[in-house]
Each structure stands twice: as C-alpha cells, then as structure tokens.
Picture 1: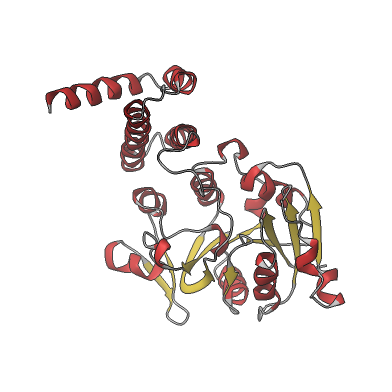
Picture 2: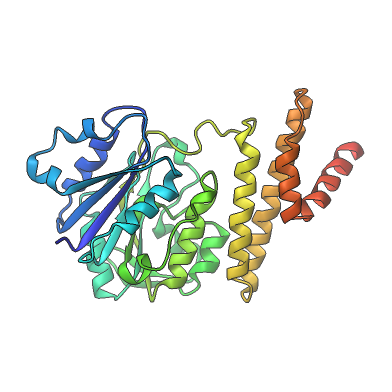
Length: 319
C-alpha cells in the first residue's frame, strides 16, 4: 500500500485537462503514492483522460463518482476514502500540475521536521497576479529558516500572517499528514467562497508543526474554475459574498482570543458586506430588483449589513 494519497477533485468540460495533471503526478521523483480522482458529476468524464496511461499507472488511480457537491465536497469524499496505510495526503486541482520534485521535497520536509502540514509555492500566468511565493514572506514577516536548498521556513505567527493576506497559499501546493486529515474537513456548503481559507486555518490549528517551501511545487493551469462566470454582475455574486462572510465569521470564532487575527477578519467581513451591497446597487442601476431573499438571509445572520447599507446610501447621496 502507498505511503501518500493524491486527491484530485474533477469537474471539467474539455478533454486532456486531467491527463495533463496526472502526467505531472506520474513524473514525480517520489513515487510511493496512489491517486483518488473524485468525479464530481463532471460534464466530461475522467475515463477518456485515463486511457493513454499504461496499465500499471491506471492501476494506481481510483475513480470515485458522486453527485455534484462542489470542490470541497469532492475533496471530502477523497479524504473519506484514503487508505489506512497512507500517512500523507496531497491535493491537486485537476487543471493544475506539479513540479517533478514537489512530493519528494514535501515528504522529506515533513518527515525530517515532524510536520503535519506543508505548503509549497505555486506559480501561474498573468491572471494569477495577486499570488506571491513563500520566499517573499522572509522580506516582510518574522520567519525561521529551516533549510537553504530547498528553502524551508516556518512562521511563528502563521495564522496572523495568513489572515492578513493568504495569497501565498494554494491547495495544489498543500500536503497534510494523518493527524490532520483524520480530523479536518472542508465546509462543502461554502462552495463559491472561502472554504479553502477555512480549511487552511483549521489544518494549521490542528497541526503540530507547519513547514513552508520556497520551491514552486505546482503550476496553476487553465480549466474550469468555481469562480468562472461569477463576476460582480452575476446573480451568484451575492451568494458568493455571503458565503465568504460566513467563512470569515466562523474563523473569527476560532480566533476569538487573538486580537490581530480578529482585526483582519473583521476587515475582510466588512469588505464582503460592501462588495455585496455595491453589486445590488448595480442591479438597481440596470433596472433589476435587488436579491431581497438573499439580503434578508444575510441580515438575519449579520445585522451590521444594514448599517453598511445605510452608510452606502448616505455616502452616495452626499456626493
């Protein structure tokens, strides 16, 4: 049985995307792994992308099919089916690829430093402009360098750093150990929003030690992303912002005794409120009714959105 399990949530509309991801998996220098592909009711089935692999490689891939539950639900299904012999889980989005040494560096770092959670850097194209690498954290944050080549660091106040700006984190560059993946799951209901950030924080809180690598473990690819089609004028945008607020609110309860983390979360929650209200103001300008049902649901959970609405209206009339 394999020491590490790779979990790939799959929902794509084009052939070849999963084949590209799996090619990078089978090119790994560390090869003591098996693969779980969770077919989340994909419009394009995964079978067509598997036929080009040899029999031995296909034997290492298990496909689990389920009704559509979103990326978090698909990853949870993968976590629920990790073999008992696996000590580690690595995530890979089906439209991303890994660098050939990703698993080798992750396994060596986690084993040597007794870490339960590992993040590598990830690179991408121009659309990934907001992301930055782990090595950049040494320029702005208090870090402890564990190794020079490859660069490995840890951050004493990691939750505080990640809640200021979590754009150095990505699921395709994350590996977790059994003590974490036995306890932590995604909130699949937050499928349009910050479920990954909630998962990151829960893993960090559950881990004995977290190691971060400056090496680029993954490359962001092109495929179907949950945010495609959810622009500011999409009907789904309000739900996305509400789900983001819910995730941030849950995180605030986890960090109630940490003022710096709470301050960051409250700032992000206010941003979600403002984004939501501006989206509804645009609907009105385009002669569409606001989404009253969703706004009422939000106000029941978060009365402060009413004060934000009043503030927005006062500011608009004063101009």
